[in-house]
Every structure is written in C-alpha cells, then in structure tokens.
Image (tube, rainbow, N blue to C red; front, side, top):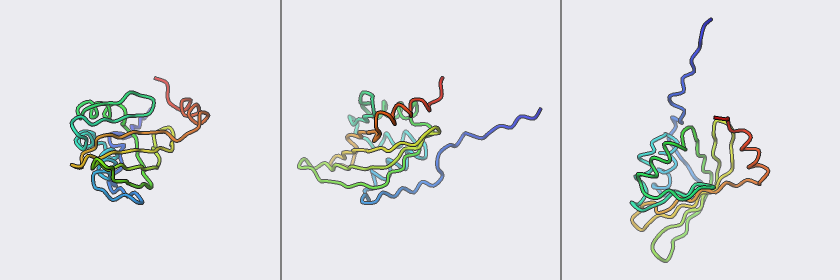
Length: 148
C-alpha cells in the first residue's frame, strides 16, 4: 500500500499583492499582506504598543506580543480578501478605515468588515473584525468546522 503525503507547510498565498478599492495606505495594505503570507510577527509590529485586535465574539487582544501569539494560534490557513473601503480623518489626527471583503478558511468563506484606526504616527491602534452573516449563516458555519 502506497501512502501519499500532501504538502501543507505553506498554505498561504504566494501572491503578496493586496489591492483594496478606495484604500491605498501602505500600513493598511501591509496588514492584509502580512496576514495572508503568515507573517504574524510583522502583522503585530504594525500595531501601536498598546494597540488592540478585536476579533468577532471574543475579547480584545491587547499589545503586540499578545496579538502575534493570538494570530499564530487563530489565523493559520486564513486568506483575507479585502475588496473595498473608505477612510475618514478624525479630529484627533487618527484615520478611520472601514473595509469590506471576505475571509476564506479551509472550510468556508464568510463576508467580513474590518474597522481599522491608525494613529497620527501610522501605527494601528485598533482593528475590529465583524462577520457580516445572518444568524442562520453563522449556525451553518459552526456546522462546517471540523471537530477536534
């Protein structure tokens, strides 16, 4: 009996180019590029020291080290596909970016919205991730995840 092994060591896209209709800020593009190539340390380095990532249905993850650890654990095999967005300059000098797109997992694809706030020094202060799905769609997603 012959066994065939499937190479899975690099599940990330080799095409690192990210284009988002309406967004050209390099930090925003780098966030998605680093995540899609699995460079979670580089992703976390884009955040302010006290910046935070707020994933759906979870408490915020605060600080670069905690963000890198969280992404290493939770973002494996994800492909983020930001499609379009817009930005707004805030009175405090920060910039608010709202982006919509999809996230592809090995099991399903889901529509997502990202809110990203950059400091006046171009560090990410916050990323909030929201799933754009109905309760029925979310229930169906739960059923598609493999059991541990």
